[in-house]
Length: 202
Image 1 (tube, one colour):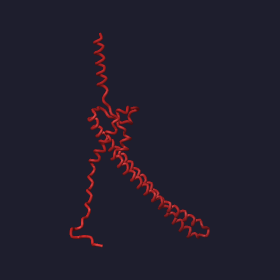
Image 2 (tube, one colour):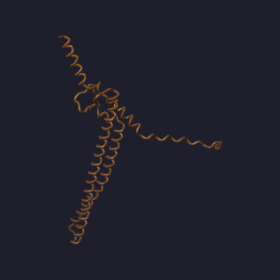
Image 3 (tube, rainbow, N blue to C red):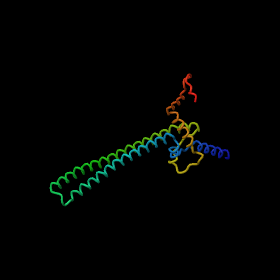
Image 4 (tube, rainbow, N blue to C red):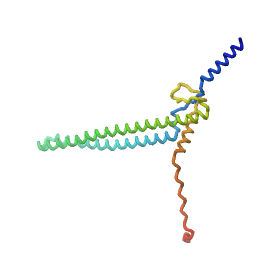
């Protein structure tokens, strides 16, 4: 009877062992902070945002100037001393300037929408690239550590620190990224004066 119970215990232990895979966990947020490629791409996006903001600022200044001109024309049109012909001339000037103002305002809104769309698209591409890289390098880490499963930390509620393989994955990511970069050009050798040229004696 005891031997049967022992066999059942061994069998159940073996089942539990087989059912529970070796698991690793990667902190995606930490990868985005420390993976050189992610840092470079985020810096690129930030530059695009700053350039777009600067361009929007210039267009907004032009709109403000047009608005001020409109207000000036409107004020001139309210002059009680203005003749009927003068009023018609001012009204035509106001209409033309207002059409320009409305056109520029619509162009500005279109520019803002296009810029935001392009930046959001680039950010989406960045995320896809980084997660694809994480999957590739996680596979290498899983083989090196004999892991059967690596999951993102954002998908779990709790993880023991012993399961965290984030730094291992980041190292693989940075090594691969560094290897993919073009080698820096060698520094130019310092100029050497011809043998026959000597500095003049003082």
